[in-house]
Image (cartoon, rainbow, N blue to C red; front, side):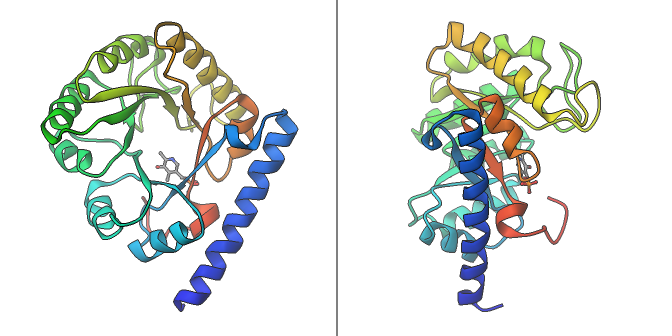
Length: 241
Ligand SMILES: *Cc1c(COP(=O)(O)O)cnc(C)c1O
């Protein structure tokens, strides 16, 4: 496919997603500007990121450092905020801190320590969301990353006190197993409750990242401030990612 065709395709997909967000905001009595679209560009090339930027996208997300680092470098001239949304190993933290404005997948204290050290070293400030696993026990961990609800407060306090890090709020992925499987709205309502608790001690942490291509309406209805949409904008991914 040529660049012009790809741009027309991405523009059409983006318009459909924008219309869905508009409709979801209207149905929930929310203002459109209360919801930020993050386009998840994982597995797609830097040329797509560039087109999305030309089409007005300002937030993109990636989940693997190996793919994200060269892409972010190729797009460093663009006015984009980069979100890291994947499970993050501490040996990748130095690289991720080099380009990520926000890490949405903070789920353990060792990761907070590593992020803080590298952010301070790079003289950057990195926004952090605690990833909540709603398929985990209170004190457990999720199959796809994230900390159980019982672990949120401790991690939030740790991030808030860590040099180079800024606590922004909470993120979740609707669980495939456990009591919330297939119940996205209930899962996102639970995330909102947990976010309200966090804001009692950290009033500025008002970001709630929830909802993907299949369930962005439920996330907007629940009160999410950020939706992360991949497939509905870029197409079905060529491989798992
Ligand atoms: C891939 C991914 C998304 C986007 O999912 P789609 O179903 O393609 O919209 C959102 N959040 C995370 C954490 C992801 O890994």
